Image (cartoon, rainbow, N blue to C red; front, side):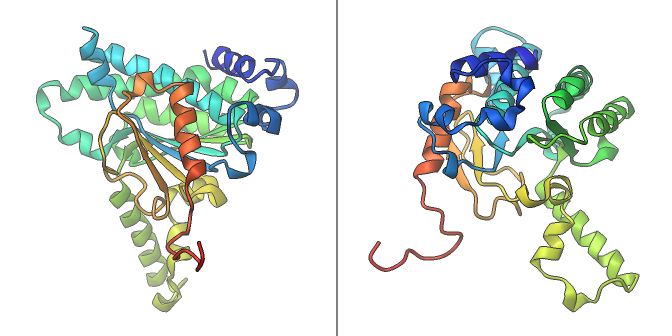
Length: 286
């Protein structure tokens, strides 16, 4: 599935599908391909984070089941993965399931959790070899204690099989919470202080950031450049709170299953119009 989507993306960019294998996806991000898409190679975000909202609403509007909505959302994500690689994005983080989701009404909660976890397991097992061939490295972040044992086994296997990928880092946030991640980092620093590895006065932002799961997974690309949320919701929802400190935010009314190439281009073009100041004021005369 992922390979077919990658090939279609290459054809839309005017590239031969064979280049996906012969030159690697890094070569697909040629300047001429990006220019044809109206994007500037030097201004591409390195890390894009996505809150994939709207699967359920999309299904309801079409008289479909929630499961069918999630399946449509999965297909949309596969396309975004392909396009991200083709356009030179180095890391994407997709919010697959939050810890707050466990607080939803219990009537349908168990069935939904089982379906989403099962789908994530299937995606990892079915795609990991293809990801490895095409230079995608998979990371799964979040609380592993809240995932089924079979899913955890699939996570470990996918991370191992794809460990040499360097074209694109794909992070799935599963049973994830931004506050939880920061607390875990603080606990690790506390243990190092207790073990006399660190002194309290040694702790600074860079040390704490280095203990976050994203930093351990993708290193230099851990800070989010572009945050995308679909379905018209205008909030962060406890997602990558530390990493989004200086992110550019992009919100769209489009439901996630409908978020395809055209919508992704809109988000990236919007990003390229922004003036990123990272907390600094405009210089005089601007």
